[in-house]
Structures are given as structure tokens and as C-alpha cells.
Image 1 (spheres, rainbow, N blue to C red):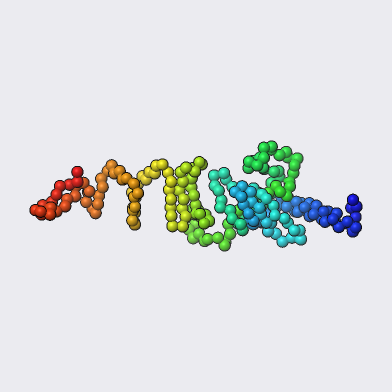
Image 2 (image 1 turned 180 degrees about the vertical axis):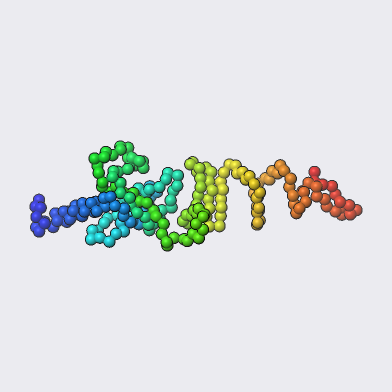
Length: 213
């Protein structure tokens, strides 16, 4: 096979691709690069590199920089930056078993995506408050196995647990619906009157009845 690019355009095309890959890797090494998400499968993100360049940067698949204990609702179009990694971290994120050697060096695929905030996102007017919000399904706080959880979305707060304890005064400013039994061990006051001691007028003699037994 001839390596003459004039008589063999396929060789020229392959040579250009290899050269571009080398240039892109060299340009990316040690640099933080802006990117947007194209897709996300829960572990890995396919991202677009958002820089103006004569090189046609391809989409790359990278892990997401986040804590094990917080799952971000990453969507297509989410903005962020690519952090260069000296070696591959597949064994850290559960996609590999063997740790890399330091001899591997930088590879264009060895980067990780870190989402960042944008002024186009909903405005938070109180900087003294921690605000959490999700996408269409809201926010969910759960135990590791998911058996106990609190979900906040749109007009609903749903709590699922085998036992719920409230230590403090509770005020309900709307209708309370109970689909089950009510067990009251303390004093029940209705309309300012203790329930067990309230009386009714006797329809026959006009005398009050006794309290509730």
C-alpha cells in the first residue's frame, strides 16, 4: 500500500485523523476545557468540547466528577468543564479492575466532567440558604437501599418510612386527611375544649350530658 497522499487519498485521510488526534491531545494536556453534555447514562457523560478551534474536536465519553452520596440530575445541554487526568480512572469508578501505571501518561480520553452553574439557571435571591432542586421529578432524599425516602416535586411532598417521628409543635393550615387509625396517648383539644371533658345539651331536660368515657 502506497503512503503517497496524492495517489492514495485514503492514506491522507487516515494521516490527517492521526495528526489531529495528536494535536488535540497535546492541546488538551494540562488544560481545563469548557464542555456541554450530549447524553448521560448515570455514570458516563458524552460531552461536546466547547472551544473555537481549527481542529474538529470529537465528542468524548468521560466520567462525572461527583460524590458517591449525591446524584446530579444531569441533562443534555448541562454546562461544565473537563478536568484533565494524568491516567485512566476506570478502576475507581467501577468500570475496570486494574490500576493504571504512571507510565501511561495523558490521553485525550482521560478527562472528567465537572458541572458548573450558569446565570441562565433559576435565580437564588437568598445567599444564606442552601437550595436544592431537580428537574421534572424534583428532589429525593433516601437511605442507601432506598427503602426510606422523601420526595419533593411540584405540589407534593411524599414521605415513605416504616416510622416517622415529629418532635415539636406541628401546625397544619389546611385540611388533614387520615386514611388509617389514630392513636392518641395525650390530651386531645377540640375548639379550645378538652375532648374528654366536653358536654352536650340534653334534648329532653336541657341538662348537660357527661364527658366522653
